[in-house]
Amino acid sequence: MKNNIAEVFEKYRRKLLAFISDRVPEEEDAEDILQDVFLSLIQTEETTSVMQISGWLYQVARNNIIDRTRKQKEDRIPQSAIRKGEDTFVYEVTEILADENQAPDKEYLKALVWEELAQALDELPSEQRLVFEQTELNGVSFKDLSAQTGVSVKTLLSRKHYAVKHLRKRLKEVYEALLYDD
Image (tube, rainbow, N blue to C red; front, side, top):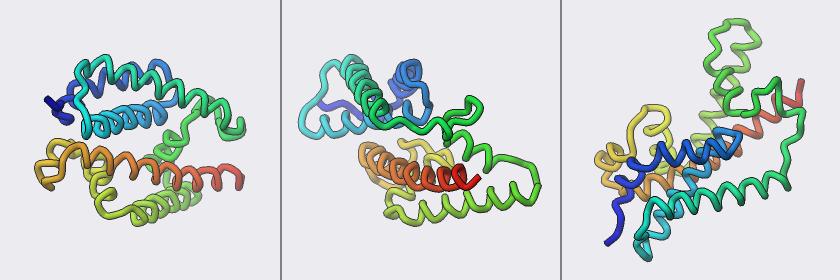
């Protein structure tokens, strides 16, 4: 009997993210690994049913953490990209967008980041954009979005995974351009 992916996601998401976050220094990487784990589950469930779901999820998470660590050793971020201990570009981009400072240079930077985010969202296929906007910007759960659209949670998770991957790549380019223009 196949597992209900939505139920598995709701049941294990937080604990699994905490497990991954304890082993991965960057929140962005932990969230990527979590998405990869559930994407692997979706792909596996298409052909076979996972019997020991908890053990399977944690083993796939461990394997992804090891793979990510190996890749990062090969692909180190330049030290100049790390500022004052704030080592995630997502944090800095969020800070720019949330900054209430009305200084002209801050307003320009904020407008530039919003513009780039809007352009990056426009580049996504409409299905990926919808899932990202609804779950991230509007706070809609996958289960509710599935009910609204008639699209399975598995498919929604997959679409969001690819949307996030694209957005991170695009916004990283903007971030690095801003960082190295100083």
